[in-house]
Image 1 (tube, rainbow, N blue to C red):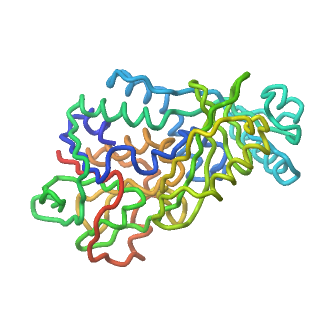
Image 2: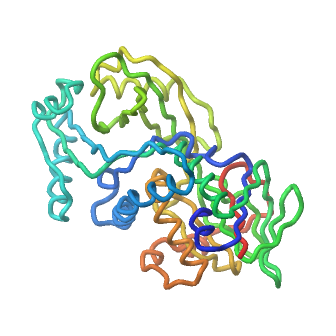
Image 3: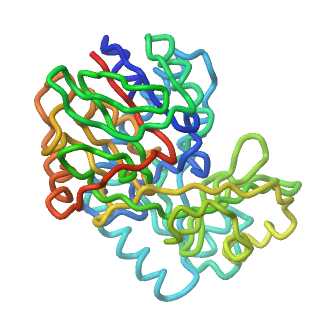
Amino acid sequence: MAYELGRRGLEVCVLERRDVGLGATQASAGMLAPFIEAEHAGPLWRLGIRGLELYDQFVADVVGDSGDPVPYGRCGTIEVATDALSLARLERSASELAAAGVACRLVSGAQAIADEPHLSQQVSSALLIPSHGFVGAGPLTAALRRAAVRVGVSFRSRCTVSRLGPTPEGIEVQTDGGPRLSDVVVLAAGSWNDQVGIEDGAPPRVKPVRGQLLQLRWPAGPPLTKVVWSSGCYVVPWPDGTTLVGATVEDVGFDERATVAGVNGLLDAAREVLPVTTRAEFEGVRVGLRPGTGDDLPIIGWSHAVPKLLYATGHYRNGVLLAPLTARLVADLVLDASPDPILDTLAPGRFEAAATPLTGASVVGSDTSSVAE
């Protein structure tokens, strides 16, 4: 968002309690696969399609403005079925996607194994979607920061925001380094969104959902060529020979610790569809807190209670996929462009009415941005 706003000529300052990319992003596999988990023809499905359509140009712009390489590929996904229930789901998905004009192909287990020889013999069928892919979330975030700096954006890391309040001149942002005044504030604090005290109104309700992600060193031999997705995990091949396996979904509050149960569950799920992972080297586990909402949709739009306060949060498991679209939607709102119709579905007002005002708290996590024109 900061990069997009800076490109459009605004003076932007990003305030971060940690540093850029150390929230949910650090445990993201960078999946770009809108046609797998979202309800077909639902609002999240439509958002994902639009996000994916923007990605080629988005990455090209970021690489061009930053000078940094960003791992990015549209290698496709292969979603596998190993039982009757998952097969029925794949058949339904294939029919709905074909009806919507999305290129896909439902193949037998033998055909799937011929395409990806590492797949288990237990795979009975698979759905291939060639438009899907992945992006390196960490390198993309670093490149975005460098690109943003080059268009005039400033960053303040290790800066805790405790409260936001309207003033006749704009919005006052209370930080541990003193108050700051901004014409517009974009609150993009992810799972910690509700811990920012807001005068004269409560923020939308966002809760943390823990995700654990494994990094493995692929064993010797041919690598995977596509992202593999099963009912228990997804496996993302990287050009450097590592493989990401994710991700758990755990409602445990603000607990960012890795667990034996989480690691073992992902390893078991990976071995079930890719037995070769038994020989992989274990390189580590990453943990992030995804910002979830009551309806699994992002919250993007103006606050009804605080003038010039704009929310951009609650992206749950789709933050990387929706990054370029969210940036455009936010920049258009700040610059008073005609509002996109999709914003009616994402408006924070759908939660504000039921929220309870906060008395003040510290931001304990990522992505709080102060935007000044």
